[in-house]
Image: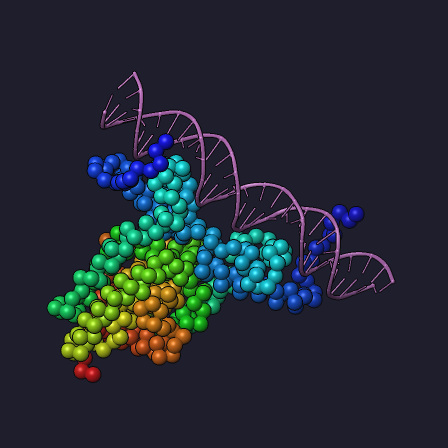
Length: 217
Length: 217
DNA sequence: CTTTCGTTTGACCCAAAGGTCAAAAATGAA
DNA sequence: TTCATTTTTGACCTTTGGGTCAAACGAAAG
């Protein structure tokens, strides 16, 4: 039999479309499960059922549970970091922060699963995305912290620690995704309700943005 | 042999002290593990090792993993709700909120595991503490929301949705416990560092409390 | 039609982990 | 000392669940 073809040339030439769709369906299902039960708690068979494939078939596309997990993380990382990247020194500080707040709140509404998955991963010590934290994310945060620090130095923003400010914005918005169950139990609705969304945003604007206005310190 | 003693009288009279200590040690160890890996991810044997007992012996004190989990949740529920209970209408609004902020931030520093455990439980839909959410917690939140609404009606606090305000305070403080890994990766330290704690509190005071001051609306 | 390569499946394997059991060891009253 | 009760242990059972394997299927190329 053939020992080995010199050039495996894996996904070259015409790539099958159907299989890509299937991979996507599996990743979607995996996000739903992982975001709810974490890497350990999620069951491969459940993910397979959710995606409408057999467990064995899933393992054909993703060699192991952990590989699938990492794949899910990779897929949502970019959209996760995107809003912060938009913040730039040229903007009016309060406008920029307002826009970021809105974008993150909308993200918490539209991709709550992504938020929860990151939260879960973080609470376990971020074993699989530690490199991203210490690398790409840290660089991005350092950069934007400089922007914020610049605004403060110009007296256009209240003197707060830039990083702490980012934590506050993240916490305030992601909370609606991560603690959706609690919010729903206490308020009776969540961000998917436009009225609720408006109230949440209004509260954040008043409580956070007002306090960030510069004063004569 | 005896069929059944008429009165089992379980923990009556002199209760053994040593066994209570052992139960406590197990619950402590369980909190550490559950808060990190969740109900599904945590291993009973690991908890047993951490507590310094054999797995079988642990199962002697707690009939099942889930029973132990619920026990852990019950044990930390009170200390979890305590700070909010302290808030009363007689206080000066901004002082009360300031005190609450400080208390919750200190709790995030001193009992980060409790914070993470609640976060995990919440993200899974709070299957085991849903009754508490809909019952005790909701009642407490409704009550304190009234207090806050009263302050607002008196013009002593900015007009924000009381519940949303509570969410903001929770989110902002618990974030330091739940996302400790991320905070440490980005800031290089956490709440256990007094300087960091002070900066965090100062930022929250400036960003949140300032915005809550009443104005001529 | 036949070959071929990618896909799909069900049967199977195996290790991990929760939980059981009966016997032994401590503990403590009488 | 003795007897009963509580605690502790190691061996074992059972289920769960991730992963393997070889055979079968199917569509496109030859």
